[in-house]
Image (cartoon, rainbow, N blue to C red; front, side):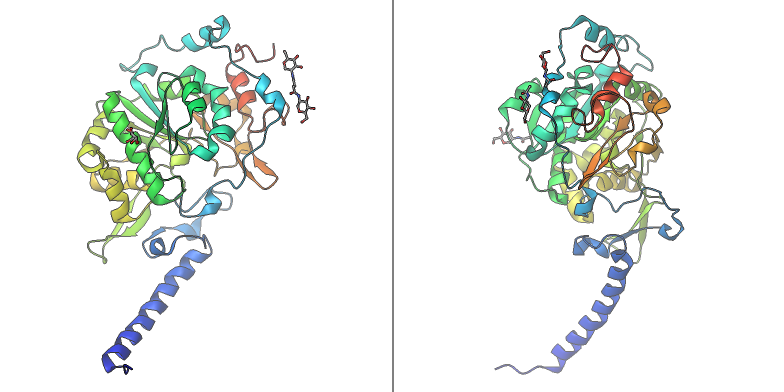
Length: 370
Ligand SMILES: *[C@@H]1O[C@H](CO)[C@@H](O)[C@H](O)[C@H]1NC(C)=O
Ligand SMILES: *[C@@H]1O[C@H](CO)[C@@H](O)[C@H](O)[C@H]1NC(C)=O
Ligand SMILES: *[C@@H]1O[C@H](CO)[C@@H](O)[C@H](O)[C@H]1NC(C)=O
């Protein structure tokens, strides 16, 4: 039998003091997000959160909480499958080609690499809305990054489904793993712009191209929208006295990075190194992108308000402004749907409103009502 030595007691006392300190930090976080994984809680906080006005969309960075992710997928009616796009139809081709001709700032749709992060369990429920709508406008540019093989989806994407071999769980490691593969694939593609979106985004393709044409891809650009009011503050891992503050674009709203900036990120983030950065700072994929760009490379996020994630209330986006928005999203919590308010198809056929939105933006598509 071992006796408790004075040294053990001292260690115990230190532990108690540490625990008290730690608990204070936990209390700080608890009102926001009690499900945040423990190792993260003492590392960062969003500065200035006390001043937040009601209704401002704020979240702890994604993957820190399960509630950040929609709990349910909107179901659909068997009538939904009647809505199909004839890819060879003339009217669709006209709509697609209308904006392909314009080349400004040496940027055209063909210069953009669009990556969609998804997971195998969402292939059927989420990708259907993308395939029926905006994917048709950018099928050569768009790649889907997932965590399992799926011959049906592989063929629907025209061979653009990438099995990242990352884990299918919705945790930091897996999200970082996928982002890492997305980034490497972009670099291989030699395109001028890297745009990342989630599988619950509608991307207004011509509007995205118009945005990118405003910026020179040979300069450093990081375009996106933060979901917190003030820069994120974390304590430096090397020197715990030092605070680091930086902005990051919410992955769920979409963001774009110019080639020039991506090349600067290469030594830090390519060839799987992105995962090491996530591990080191223990923050999710989109936050880690912000960390690399803003903190390590000292480049600034350019805020683009036209990106929208499912954390925002979709009905607040005015229909008169739809054509000016770049991304949209949806979510479902229990029976409550967070979707755009838009006239069009029956809610049962089009629960996400993406099909109605698509017809609002591109009325000449053949499934759109005359
Ligand atoms: C749709 O489903 C309903 C019942 O779930 C069925 O009665 C109906 O025949 C189906 N319609 C089609 C077009 O498959
Ligand atoms: C689907 O389309 C077919 C052919 O246009 C039509 O006959 C059928 O009624 C439609 N089914 C539903 C469920 O809307
Ligand atoms: C995933 O694993 C398969 C089989 O080993 C391999 O062929 C493929 O290249 C891997 N994917 C990636 C993105 O590394």
